[in-house]
Image (tube, rainbow over the protein chains, first blue to last red):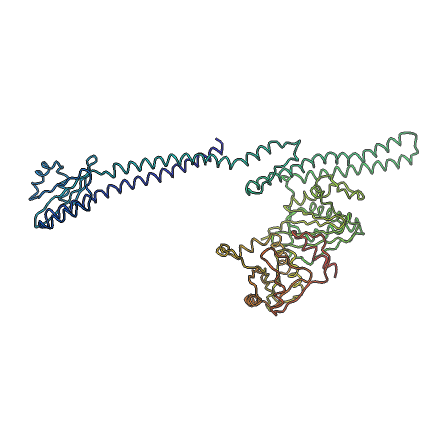
Amino acid sequence: MKTQLKIALFLIFTNGLMLLLFGGSIYYFLYNYSYADFYKRLETRATIAAKYNFDADKINAESFKIIRKEHLEKLLAEKEYLYKVEDSNDLTGIAQKSELPLVFLKDIMANGKMTRQVDETFFTGIRHESHGSIYIVVVSAKNYYASNHLLFMRNVILMGIVFIALITTYLSFFFSKRIFDPIKHITDRVKQISTDNIHLRIEEKDNDAEISQLISTFNDLLNRLETAFETQKNFVSNASHEFGTPLTSIMGEAEVMLMKQRSPEEYQQSLVSILGQAERLNQITQTLLYLAETGYTNKRVNFVILRTDDLLWQAKEMIDKLNPKNHIQVDFSLLPENPKKLKVMGNRQLLSLAFTNILTNACKYSNNKPVLVTIASSDEHVFLAITDQGIGIPESELPFIFDPFFRASNTSHFEGYGIGLPLTRNIIKIHGGQLQISSKVNEGTTVQIKLPLAKIP
Amino acid sequence: MEKTILVPIDFKVESLNALRLALNTIHAGKVNVVLMYAKYPTDSITEFLFYSPDDVVDSLKTREFDEAIAIIKNRYESLLNRIDIELFYGFGTSALSNFLEAHRVDTVYFSKNYSLSCSKKGFDPIPMLKKTGIGYEEVGGELVQEFVPRPTTLSTLFNYFGLEIANH
């Protein structure tokens, strides 16, 4: 069953149930009340009848009768029964005379008063004591109110229920349709989007908070998907380019050499150059393998407790050896006092590879301008910020910097393959950390590494 | 010797620079820090009805801000006693004086080269603080040029401090 129909049916059912409860309870309580009320009225009449028949003197009795006639309306088929009871045997006689059942009379004698209903006629009897004798007074009448007014009200309530039920049904279907219309719209729109036209987006609405949230979530997902698709496309072209360049130069070198007879020195020279290109190819393949290995999250690497400042120094020493002209400054002014707050769980080789990568990049793309490394830690994370004053990354290219073989458009003067950053990101990811890069062209780049602290008791 | 200092903040990481620079000038003793955010009281009666200072602070502060406070706490662990975030509501200098007295503030610190940028309903309490006659110190050197400003990330803290160090 469709959710839309489900909601509509649920609304109809609950509303109908409430309506029935409401109407039913009104009818039920009024019905009960009308009976109790009618018996009360009969009782009043019986009391008055007893009073003027047995208690009062003649003159008073007349005035009682007049007052009663003036103020109490005559009920439908009203009848009075007045009997004097000398002893309990009289009851049988009274019962025969009045056609009232003996049990009813006995109950009146026992309880003081009693009520009874035969078809539409109602009886109320009371026991009256006056001047030392006991009387039974019974008044009977038909309940016009119950038979007519209640019937009329029942019809009104029933009609009301049917009418409101119709309106509720219509509104339920209307609302469930209205609620699901935008969702249906989204479904239709998303259906249109395939791998060929992944640039399509769902237009956002401002007036509907939940729906626009859903739409923007969808659009975000599509954005990421689109980037991923592009990455895949770029990867193949970039990889073939990276592999192609050394291969072309190897082939060219070899072809030139084979054109004619060469001296052994020339062969040697060209073989050295071929070897250099082959080494470059090998290096790319090695790094790619590394990248692929670190990309599998299910492969567990050996983790030990490491100090981040220690790792940082190690990376700095390494770079000092490779590139003595670097200007890396380490800022310890935010270093926590407690060395525990610097310890992370990690793999020494991988983390130091990551740090070295970031620091090398910072030195390389800023032509050895000062690079500032700040280390700080909060209660849960260690932060490393590496700030350079280099060429920066164009803002439009920031989403792609973690794609293998991607190189920003302003890096053509610098050597590199574009594998370092994705590798670093993978390493940080394995350690449960985050890598944030913010950059401005020609001003510099800041890389912020956030690693979770080791939980040391 | 225990000492209480007050630093006005705007719940941005940059505003904590003043705290850091202030703590650099204090070398011994224990320091209680009151981070004060000045705010105009709300006009809405329902907001007053369900008013809770913790909720207001929670809605204003970001995760970066929390992390930055944690960084400073770790850095000055031996110096710091506690860091509290307090809200100040009010218009007059006398109200502010009462606030300072209630929190037993000894000195107020604020940055020379950062002006608080408060959101709606918030205001910059520095001119008012100066009027209360409490001892205040302005920290920070000459205006350094903002470098790669990314106001929402923690790196601003590093950058800012880093350059400060580099300039010395």
